[in-house]
Length: 264
Ligand code: SF4
Image (cartoon, rainbow, N blue to C red; front, side, top):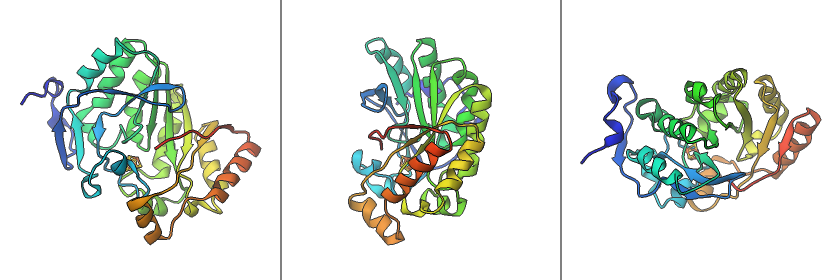
């Protein structure tokens, strides 16, 4: 089987060697109602971050025990390039899985997708928990791009429990500062709002403010099925109390608070 996208660079040049499977996708773009975006784009299936609240396995009919095996869509750049000619509007990168999870360091599909989007003059909205996104600041600052950095708690110990494979909040916000300094439009995405954040909302908002971000987008979700069982076992729930507090404190700190939208 041929993987044309992977032939033009040396995949052994980076040291990521997590479990993965090379697959081909039928379509790169799928309609979405996320914010201003018209289509979603996800170069990877599965996600190494392994967040306890992740509902994407159910959404994509993936066995949860295999969710952290990354499915690398080797033909996605080629598909994207063709499909962009028949679509219009902004593209949301990373609506189902993180486009900058560690596998991206090796496969660089998100970067190659950005190169295509930039060439074709299309806007992009990126959602990520990973500091790897700063690698692509050179492209992002020269295109219509917004990066949403997801954060859920100021305490790295709690993040390691709830988002075990993801960079810590400190690392994410350091990356946000780099992007802001590079002139890339960067916002914070506090989602989901969990009970583990109660009492520490202001601390998280202060860390966000220190990164230079001035816009915050908060979203909630209702855990179901396996996700709810897993969160129940850890004594964590979604929290409307923390959500109300974020809005109140966020406004008093001068953040632009975007209205809630449906999100993963
Ligand atoms: S980063 Fe997103 S897709 Fe990945 S495990 Fe966490 S919630 Fe799921």
